[in-house]
Amino acid sequence: MPHVALYTFGVLKSPLADPAPLTREFYDIGEAVYRKIIQHPGYLARAEPAGGDRGMLFEADWGAWGEFAVPAWYGKGRTAETTALATTLSLWTDLRSAFDAVYTGLHREALNRRYDWFERPGHPNYVFWWVTDGAIPTWRDGVSRLEHLHDHGSAPHAFTFHHSFAPEGTPTTIKGIGPQSDQVR
Image (cartoon, rainbow, N blue to C red; front, top):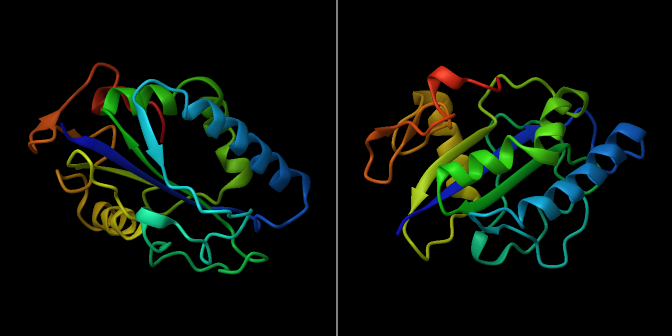
């Protein structure tokens, strides 16, 4: 059975290494959100660096998730001191589970404050695509899909909650997901 991959990407207003209260708050909330997300029904896995530390994204060993990559439009730092981004790569059993995890609880609370921490994007900040059972998406896959979404809009190759596709490539709507329920913009 196929699984759905989710890649998220946001540019922070300041580097992760910044000691300012808002940066620390984002990082602390992020850790709490991860603890909740991994317990959510439908969650399968996420990319985690082997022994990585805050800001150690580009230098980290990501194992089967591949070499760390970012979209072409990211123009900030790439060192532990200058990296100003937050990104995730995860696998889910289905769109409904991912939607419920993203738009409820602690993650929803964090989304409501995203512009305290993140620059307002001129690009999509997340993308979904289907993968075969047992496949591990890579960071490069996520970047490629996000850039495709930006350039071409939602398609079976790269899509959003609001304009989603079933594994076989047909448009789909799930109660609470779709153009009629455009809950977060």
